[in-house]
Length: 114
Picture 1 (cartoon, rainbow, N blue to C red):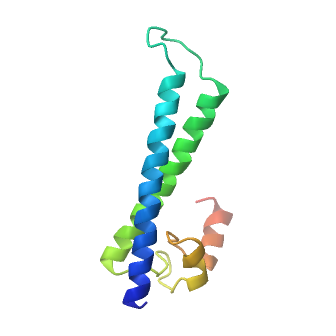
Picture 2: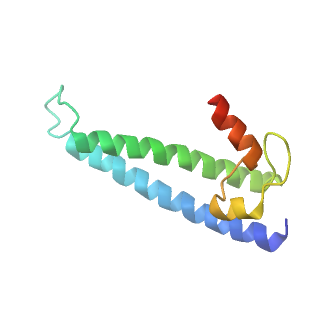
């Protein structure tokens, strides 16, 4: 992959990482606010708090994937499938710049539930 392409992916991934950090912080703050007042110890989670914690968990997983892609960029392995080593299609990286697997390996992962 050309250096200009790698630079562009690095910029996109860094933007995604910043955005995800912000979203996660907002989700955590919303859940904390929803659990107030602090003197009530067994306050049940509201539906909104459950949705916020689910969003936070999803965003945290995505953040992990984005950071792993940035790590692969630094290691010089970005754009290669972590399973089989094949080159990941540019179209896939355009859609999911944090993609770790080629389409074939991703399908196998989904079928086996891993």
